[in-house]
Length: 194
Image (cartoon, rainbow, N blue to C red; front, top):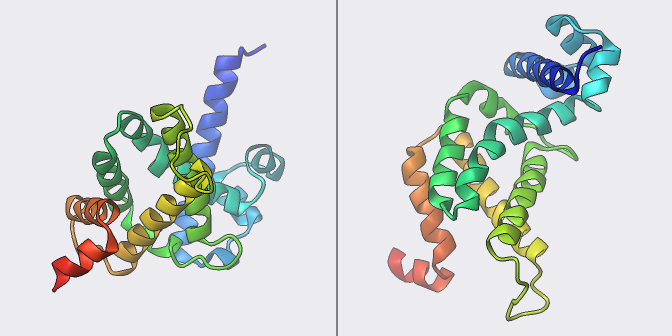
């Protein structure tokens, strides 16, 4: 009988195989054309194994975003190194350009944007709660969840437009831009533009 550690390693390996297969398929096809059957055939697994790991192909996309983009930045976020975290996130996107250029085109209920905001909000909320466990906001209406979603939406919007605009600036420069727009009022920014 295998121990829990062996089972966990096997699960992670299977998750990675499925994710890699999904990425290869998305580079060549739209998500609508990718089937679970095709993922299984190409990755050499059977359907029940797929469904033991993921609910559907959008769940695989969530796994990729979480594991490849968000998990690596958590230590930086938890140490209040937000610009460095954003730079790492953007660098990781840039390391897989072909996949992310296709992924940002996913629209609808399970759009890349929607999934990204949901996952980024969770990481930001976890960061807020870790760095500031006391709930003392000046405005009671402004919840931690709302704050996390607001900044996640902004981060995702900036990153997705960077991808759609063919990575026009470096990850460092875009991180600097994001830090600037998130730390200044819109009035300050308008005054700087003039």
